[in-house]
Length: 299
Image (cartoon, rainbow, N blue to C red):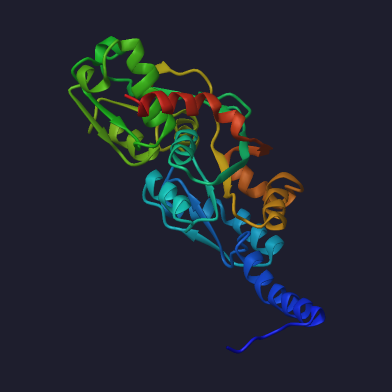
């Protein structure tokens, strides 16, 4: 048998060399520093409009973070959630219900910022909005009971104002599920398409975000007095921006700084979106929405 012996100095040298070899690989797994940075946005409007509206933010992120920012295609709210769960998106804007859904499914995400918006015809100033039940003004609908047996458009299964609030809060006021009150319930895919479906008489009514209805009025895609609001929810906290929890701390801090420090480079974007700036948020801001989503998922 061959015996191998180590002197203390040799053993220390060996241990040190092993540490030098192993430490970088361990540290590399501690956090992520993605290049490029991948951004996903829920489809509140067409992908082309979102890409154009958010271009100033993308450019500022690229300049501040010294890396390319890639806008990921997102045909649905669920696509953004899946991208976060799979680690394919590093930064995202979610709706409150989509945020609750992602957290419920175990997404490691941190809510850190939200828009503050200008006052509109149906939306208060600040970082809240409403779910609205709308119909054409020229129909005979004047109250929610008039819609019994008609057709309804929701926006997306993960939308707050276009799905969660209608199926939970509004359904409670009816005393029965939406599918039993309305003759047909369908999904339009976005707030803009739901508004258009009401305009074109493809459905009798729709649930949409108050901020999206205000923008349609401002842009002239619907005329004043064309759309009637038959029901309005309590205030809903505005959409959170989130980043993955595994992002390296210096990168996460620089991202938050872009959103929450000097906003002068983003003034044109704010004017386009009818926003006044960004505000800091955290998970607690969306606690009630998360509880509402938990109740829904338990049924």
